Amino acid sequence: MDWSEIKRAAGLIKKADSLIIATGAGMGVDSGLPDFRGDEGFWKAYPFFARANIGFTDIASPKAFKQQYRRAWGFYGHRLGLYRQVKPHAGFALLKRWAEAKPGGYQVFTSNVDGHFQQAGYCPERIYECHGSIHHLQCLESCCEEIWPADSFEPIVDTSTCQLINDPPVCKGCGGHTRPNILMFGDWGWLGHRSGQQETKLENWLRSAKSPVVIEIGAGVQIQSVRYFSRSVVEEYGGRLIRINPNEWRVDSKLDVGLALTGLAGLRAIERCLSDLSDKSMESGEAL
Image 1 (cartoon, helix red, strand yellow):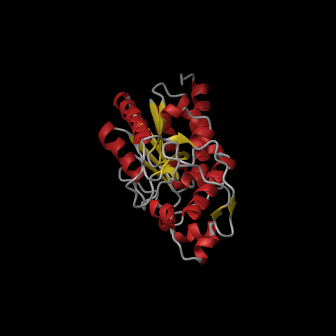
Image 2 (cartoon, one colour):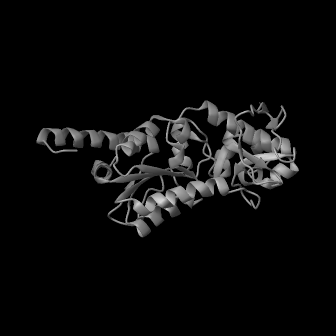
Image 3 (cartoon, one colour):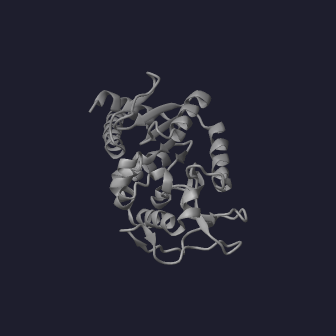
């Protein structure tokens, strides 16, 4: 563990007027959620698909909903139940405390569809889910523009075959088939206006943000939505970047910080340094 870099990260956070929390799939691993990056991780979590030689991109697609409706809902229904059951790890609370203490406030940018920031008590008005949310539904055939919560849907799944056993939700407009309001692979039918409204709020906030620091966690290079966003904040808004990733941690600028750690380990290490900085400030009489 490189404590000099962790101390640099803590210093950036301490001086920041505002924070942006940007997360990819790696953020959920410490909560016990499976990592679907690559078929091997996906097949470990869902052995049926390994036996059937069905990859993640095959089942995570509108085509799967049209060709094998109950199996697609078996996969997404199981994930919906899992995300409801699993509790966000302690790193969410650390980030929330740091962010809420900033005079300029905070925003969240996430490619995760699990809803764990909302579950951890973050303000929904400060969250941009760029790939949508599994907790919302839309018509499979896009008969209307309506997006509605999936709160009343309690999926029952045969995990041996990944088949939905009970009735899937029906479209509020046409009474037909539904799908999660998630941007899937090969997806031309996703209704993005809910996420678009979130994006507008984030962009409006960014225009007034002063010295924002992006804390990017668990965002890899395979799907670059989060990394692209982090880079745009640095280049367009003069922000700085703290990247926490056990494998793909390197940053482009010496002014930024890359930590080769998992999300929770990195956040706990930074918290330790922030506490040390606070103690030293109090000893010297410096106002925080």
